[in-house]
Amino acid sequence: MTGPQALITGWDIGGAHLKVAQCNRQGQLIRTIEIPCPLWLGIEHLQQAIKTVQQQLGSQQTLAAVTMTGELVDIFADRQAGVNDILDCISQYIPTECCIVYAGGLSWLSISEAKEQWQQVASRNWQASALFTAKQIKHGLFIDVGSTTSDIIPIQKNQVITQALTDFDRQANSELHYAGAIRTPLIAIAHKVPFDGKTLQLAAEVFATTGDCWCLLGKLDPLSISDTSADSQSWQPQDCTRRIARLLGTDASNYPPEQWRHLANWFAQQQISQLLGACEAVLTANGSISAKAPIVGAGIGRFIVKKCAQELGRAYIDFSELIKPASVHAANHAPAVAVALLACDQLK
Image (cartoon, rainbow, N blue to C red; front, side, top):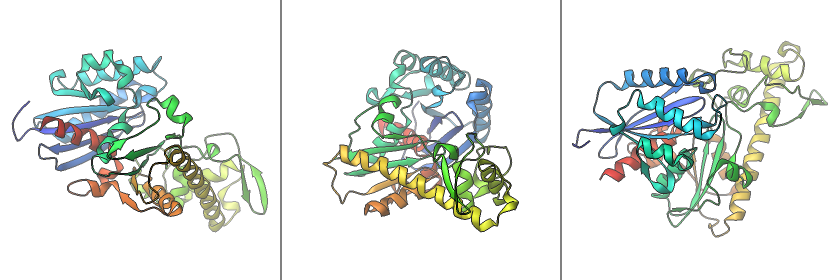
């Protein structure tokens, strides 16, 4: 594909969302799109999400740059099957000659090459975001807090200096912190909580998630969340408090709203503290990073990253500031934006 009018579209295929970013050949971001895609319920949800995105994009000439984490969902027998099935699904809607797949150190692969080198393709969306950031930030820590997970990636001398590449190894060294701003069950944050002068054991159920707390605290807009809540009801305060109360085996109406906000803040502080601990572990393992090096925050939960930067005494840079033109939505969808802009650089 050639020609100055051709567009580049980055596709980040997750287990819960399909995120898409489009730019022109000059590296200017044009739009971002997020579509709910509960892939764990079946490949047909990805098929429908792709069709919805294509309807919004129209018929412009475009090159698709793809990255993914969706191969981890439990409809697939293993990660290789997940990569292959996702690539087969993409091929139904995007001509293979118009599609390149991000493969970390191998750069870009065709669909067929990506199937052969699936280990280089599986769950590498974080690497695209970090590489894009490293091109513009000489030293620092890139942190993307999404709806489900958090990536903590060290950067030195404009190079990504991770200690691991697979999710297994990244979870072991804290570069992958499995908690996000919306979908993480609160029972994964804590098993006991202080409430009404007592210490209460929580029900071991997915009754409420981190999104309930951040909505109650005003850090997330209930109308902007595309994820389904634990009981499939809204993210409005009355629904959030009802879900949190279930964890305590009670009803929200039994206590005043301020007590539920206080509990939400307690959970929030626990989540911040846990992410801060992961950041400190990564910084300790990469002691050559200067204490003055900034933290770059991305993802829907980057307000948590900003708080961690303050706690660590480091400057904070929002991922949106690295994009032309600056875009809050771009910061929410960093991997999709990154693969689009990295592909743009590759084609220059």
